[in-house]
Length: 456
Image (cartoon, rainbow, N blue to C red; front, side, top):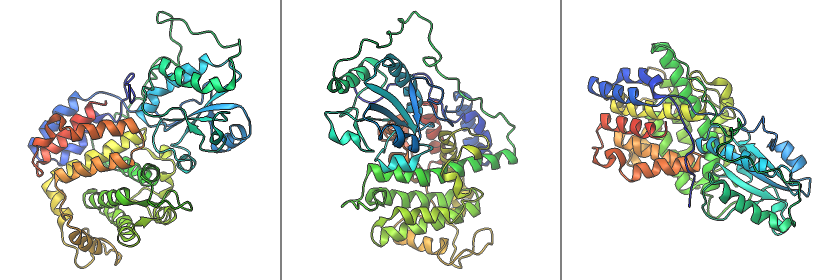
């Protein structure tokens, strides 16, 4: 078997809390969107804190604790690298915990976990490019397992949610450590026994239910911009691990190049034309200029240069510190996935709105922002000329917007199975996507809602 099976509800952002986004839609689109909003499932994604903080059988690691325990001992370790916002990581957490509890009396091995949402630089540095990822450490039959990166717990695909299959992989690794001691914890009772709290689905945080007003619209936009800022830091590191620059540069393993850099440029160009805030569009346009300059120059965007560009500016009201950990700054969302879905829906609605599209295509020959503010010389006016030279339309169509969302998810979203599912939904023309005209704003916006509802 391959991939992950879905266990329980991997709910993301509650689309019923997004009704204000439809306010700018043409009336037919607004009415159709309301039907999907009413049919959407409830709840936000779990996450926002380490998943194993309260576990007695899985050690929640930080980089410092990792160095002091895993690397400083000769004891075997099995570590789950996850992101607390990742739905498949949330689904897998009870499995990892349950299996760890069955080895709690086995002195040969210790189970650990690290939240890469909080420690993204460390995880990217050891080439964790998808979540969840399992690594084995200090295995006598694998000399490289003593290093920071360890060795993969498995080769190829397997079904993470099948406990027996996971235990088979673990037993194969532990065989090199000699026979199992006789003090193994007893196997838990069968299906009829009461489930422990770790085996029960964790309750989803209650969504913030506030009236749809202009104030709540601002809060939703902030959540979308928070997700964008976090993605531009965390997601670009993920992309660099998944698609390393060729030939690799050992001094800069997280540099972006090739397909990943090209997709980053396209994504930033799109967002800089559709984000509702003129100040946000300006800020994203400046980041787009940095990425495009690297693409047209050496073809490689150094990690240090990109982090400097992120640290030097806000995106609208969102400061660069939110890129490290957005949790303290959420307004209505509780997790990255909710903020990201909010951003996607805002972009598709903006692409569907004729007024927004005319705004995106407005000329800026004098370097003057659409709201009258003067931009820096290397801002949108220069970007617009670069777009035209690259053959990118000034006014993004709804079809182009969906395509760029697909490219973002494939390259920059760390939940591997979530990414595969979304890309497969898009590529296989589910919900009639391939029958949509490129200019069908209503159809494109509703297609995204349908895709959203399948994981909610």
